[in-house]
Image 1 (cartoon, rainbow, N blue to C red):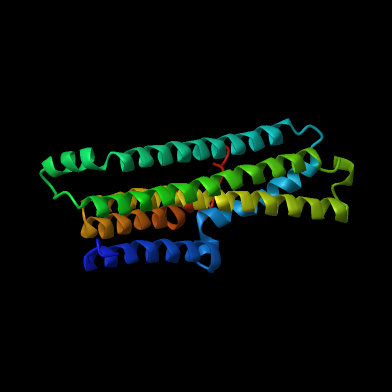
Image 2 (tube, one colour):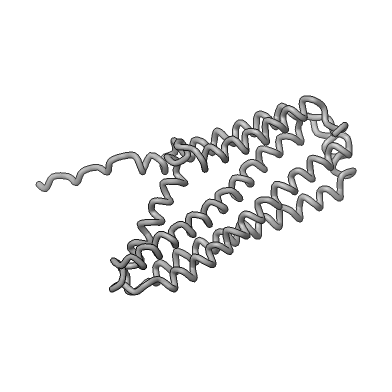
Length: 235
């Protein structure tokens, strides 16, 4: 820890505190339950209810496959990011030479640079585990879609319990996917640390403001709050 200055430690503490605080707010508070992610969970329940009433479920299978493919893409991207970070870690001397020539900063010590790169790699490893587990959960969910009761049993207690279990599993897969994507966003904020502690604090604040707006004040979120326009009167 001797390589870090007090401003570095304060900025890193701000980064960790903002990440944890935002995650807890989104997932464990009443405010979070009014966000865009929570709104989509309601539609997962509705999806499963409507699936029970359909005889042909090809659309449901296609939607499930799309969810799996999107998660697999991000998991693969995480591995590429990990490989790139480790490559940069092995090229510390060459990179510091380039950084020293830039007009907006002073090259840090090799030890400080390597510690920062290790931290970035840890973020991508965390993201990979979240995306990989989300992909696995979507696999389980696909099996449940295939095992859904037939339409004539849709009103039975067993079918309703099945729908709610499937919706919860889908929501859990979505929650882990959101955590992995959140790690990607904060990794972008973390890059500010390579310019210094103040840029880290600023980029972290900027990232959390963008994510907050998308959850609570974006056009997508407002679509769930606005009343649809009435049909025009016939002429």
